[in-house]
Image (cartoon, rainbow, N blue to C red; front, side):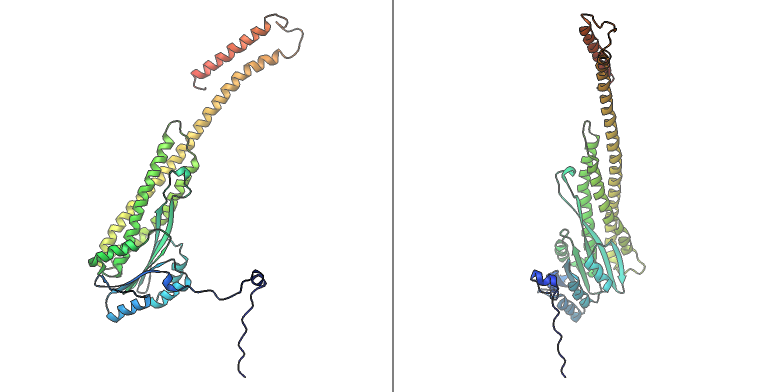
Length: 362
């Protein structure tokens, strides 16, 4: 007997009540995630548009050149299509899709996988009105013998300018896929420099506000800036080891000509790391200074309150004594007693006020 085809499963009661039919997940074409795809031979880009499959086939048909595929936030299905074409390991695919990785350098057979954290400075009028100062993203680079794949997560740090600059430098681009790896790493580290320079202005303004006389700075603002510095440090500092490994010689797949350029990137990265450490130390000092300033202000306020309490205690004490309603009290029936008491109260309070003022309590 011919097999009876299985009926499609009915949606859940919740789907039926909401009027929605349960169905298969729609797969978004891989081309939607590809920002650019080019074939490069002898440092020159071949004319025409290529899919990632056609580009790789063209390179391997020629036996020279490489493919550069750029993707923006691909989903799992899109990344699996690219991985199937280029033979990427499933662990690399998982990292590329889910992101939120620390900077690292891994090697799967002949494929080098580099993860970089990108940072962007969020413009703001002042730290007091800002809710975020540094936003982060990720760039992942897959480098093979005849291809390089860049995957970007985040709305900032686009790589279009990096591609255009390399295409104008044919001599550098002719060095192969690792020239692209260097260009991307150099671009990201240069962005670190720009962000740290912008943050330096925030740190300087905060330092000026803390040490300015008669200025009040909320400690929360310093904590906000310090939190952003910590986020920046977590994005930048772990990249030191991958860059160092790319400059070392034993078992390094990076050509010697490119390694020299990576040393320059490592130097810039060291400069950024030193700046971040300096900012972190300054902000820690500012927190201590702000707390000390608050303590001094509280002591001053307490002295003022104590001085006014002491002044107010004099008329309160005298009025309390003469309010006890005893018949046999000195000067109780004296005609000038009321005015004399007022004079005594005024004289004592004025004397206390002058004394406290001279001692800078008021």
